[in-house]
Image (cartoon, rainbow, N blue to C red; front, side, top):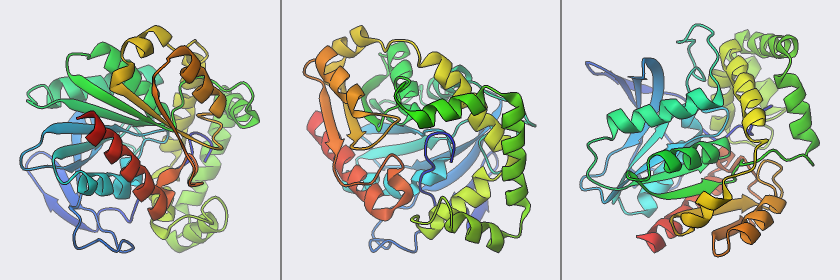
Length: 334
């Protein structure tokens, strides 16, 4: 895809039940060997600040802390189901888990074509914490992927009394001027004509019979993906409103992330942060790893060597590896 690489999901919402306020669905996993042992994530469609929002949730019986996961761009939470369920399982059920989607990056056009900036998406997550997690009696741990790392960092600065620990996965924290891919995306995102044209082409693909769109995706961008990741792309991203919002958010990302990172805050809170970089990732390049290492001495930094790429959760192996890494960080911290 054209913004932060598309990540893993599964076939959406095969079993559904209706509650008085929110729609819930149990998520299935045909390809995992531990399927019978794993706690399933529940899907919930709710209003957050007046906007339809997808949530994935796993509730622990007696949680010691609450994990809030913020996705990249696109912000489709069902891409991360395998990762989140693996993480819950590896932590032994001691934490409740919630993943929150970005506004208007959903299967249905709930917001009728309105576009949302990086700042609006950040405020949306802030509002969720303040209204949905305000009564939480346990610490909050933020986990962000790609631009979700930047959002998590911004939230941490604004809610230091609620957030205890932050983990940044393949973080997009600054514009990479050496990346031709980013330069190309920036050019498209800055042009409404190009955005409209690209969104229209993608929407046409989304209107094709499902089996045709799946074949096209599988034989192009998804040729190495699990079938469920292909399904996610077809159901959630091949939508005019989704691509429009992805590109608009990307435009505002490039504007904001042209600024220098807040090194002072990172140094102050380095004991409450951890970073995972990829070995070949233009969104979170290794020169950013080196810069953090130099400007935030003692920061917890790691480079993933398993060749899972930025879109780690497009494969079962990538989801499980990163879940193991994150679980280890959390256990060490607490």
